Image 1 (cartoon, rainbow, N blue to C red):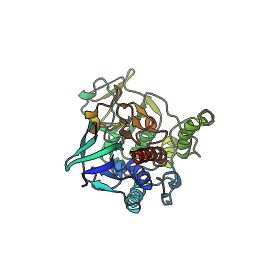
Image 2 (image 1 turned 60 degrees about the horizontal axis):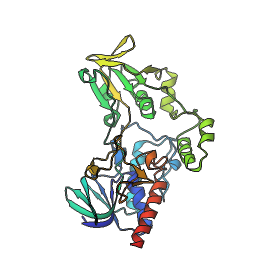
Image 3 (image 1 turned 180 degrees about the vertical axis):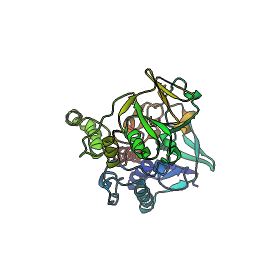
Image 4 (image 1 turned 45 degrees about the vertical axis):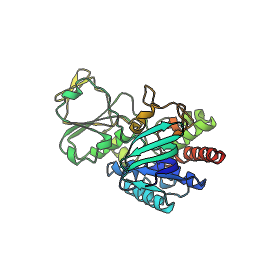
Length: 348
C-alpha cells in the first residue's frame, strides 16, 4: 500500500467510487481505502429481497449507466454486479481489507492510520456512509424485552421470524419493505411509527425523490412538494401488502416489557422487534480530529469541514448535498469536490 497520496478516500462504496471517478478525470493522485474484501459497500449487507426504488437508468453512478434489468425495480444482486463492474471499468485504485482506525492532523498534512500502516495525505475524503452506525431510539423497558431485537442493518430476511409475532418500527421505505417481506412467514406483523405513512402515487417511483431533492438546488422545490407529497415508493410488494391491510399503522410504543410493548392501554405480545429507524453518519475514524457537533454531524461548508477544510464528506445525506446518499445523486457533490481539490492542488 502506498504510504502517500494527495487524496485518500475512506470508503469504497458508491460514494467512494463516484469520488474516485471525478478525481481520476482531473488527474488527481488518490487512493481508496475500503475495509470490505469485495466491492459493493453497504449494498452487500442488505436483505436479499431489497430492491431499488427507481429503474436502472435512474440508479447510475457518473460515467456509466447501470445496465437495464427486466424488473422495473432491480434487485440488490444487480446493484452489486454493477458496482463491481464499475470499479473494474474505471480501474479504481482501491485497497481492500484495509480498516481505517484514525485520522490525525498536523500543520503539514493528515495521517490516515490503518492496520497496515499510515498513509500521508493532503486531503481526506470520508465516504463511509451510515450503514455501520444504525440508530435505535431509547424506549422505556427495551432492555427488559426477552425477545429478539434487530436493526434493519442486521435484517437478513424473514426466515428467522417464522411463526412469530413481530413489530417493525419505522414508517419509511425500509419499514414498509420489511413488513411486506415478513408477510407469509411471521404469524403477525405490526407496523409502528411516530408519524403517518406518506406514499407516493402508485405510478411514481424513486425518480421523483431525486428530482425533488435536486430541485432544492434550483429553488423549484416548492412546486414539486405541492405537486406530490410523500416519500414511500409503492413498489409491487408494498402495494400487495397494503391491499392485504398489512400496512395499517400503529402508534409508537409507549414502553416495552419482557413480553412485548404497551401502546396506549393495549399490551401487544411480541416475539421480535425490527428497528427500521435509520442511521447516523459512520465517522468514528475521524474522532481524533474533533470535527463533530453535539448532533454527531460535522459543520461543513459545501462538503468540507469548517474546522479543518482538508477533510471532506461525500454521500451521507442532504448535509453533504441533496440526494447525495443515492446512487444517482452522489455524482454531483463528488464532482464539485473533486474539481475544487484539483484546483487547489494545481495552485500548490
